[in-house]
Amino acid sequence: MEAAAVKELPPLAPPLAAYLDFIRVERKLAPRTQALYEDGLRRLQDFAEHDGIEPRRLQINQARRWIARLHGQQQLAPRSISLLLSIWRGLYRWWGRQQLVALNPFDGLRAPKAGKPLPKALGVDDAMQLAEHHAPAADPATEARDACIVELLYGCGLRIGELVGLDAVVDSTSLGWLDLLGAEIFVLGKGSKRRSVPLGKAALTALEAWLARRAALAMAGEAALFVGRRGARLQAPQIRQMLKQRALAAGMPAHVHPHMLRHSFATHLLQSSGDLRAVQELLGHAHITTTQVYTQLDFQHLAKVYDAAHPRAKKKSGPA
Image 1 (spheres, rainbow, N blue to C red):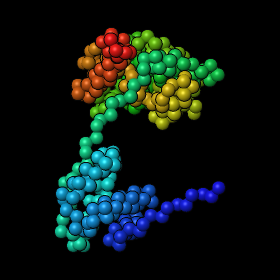
Image 2 (cartoon, helix red, strand yellow):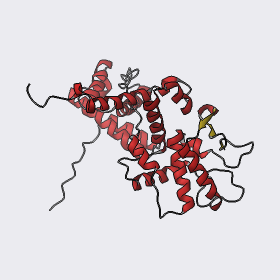
Image 3 (cartoon, rainbow, N blue to C red):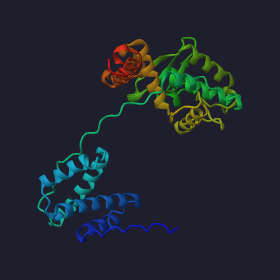
Image 4 (cartoon, rainbow, N blue to C red):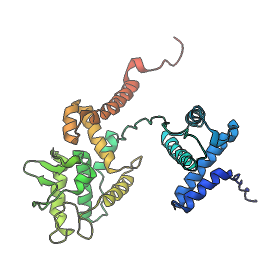
């Protein structure tokens, strides 16, 4: 069977092609960025041809209609519209410097506001399944380390940077350290603000198990709590990769990353306690408004429980 013929794109009008040449030759942008610019210019050309407008005569009211069309008819995401606006503004500025246009119709226009996505959290059962997962074939020291990392991310709600900064050997340069007797850890969070986080029984047990085996991996003089196979401090990309593989092995339904465990910690704690201020303190949020996003997640959880269990939520199967 013959391969389908590739449809050739129509050439850009000379004024638009000249700007693309400027982008390629003068600004020397990366090939991927050049492709984005070309796509943006083609969209502008298509709109202009559809409306019977010479692009250099475009007016502000017409430009506004184009933005509305991108958002409404074409259902383009706000981020994609922002990118197009940036490309089109640049084009008209360039024309303006050459005195080819009297105004920039895209100046002052903004893309529709993007809705802030809610953070993703694991369900309680999935989080427990991940925390209790063991890899019996793994090296005992590595397994103890990885299990401890999961416990601190989910059981304490640590940020990845706070976890990486923890030291087992404490000196004046330590960013974060442990207090096993007091069952708490001290971390350095955003804005260089230090806070203490309580250790639950499971996290404390996991920490003690890892510390008993840490010497098998750590090089001499290494202060970091968590170290890799070469004995040096584990870095965030290594922890992300480990967590991804561990979650897959545990049968998680979706990609799991460190911040998802922090979100899960906050969501499950709020569901159990209802104490938003306490969750704020434990997460190290400077403002309560940052923590309030978890009330939305909690409401979603409550709504699902209501839909599944409350007699008033159940739809009637047939006429009365």
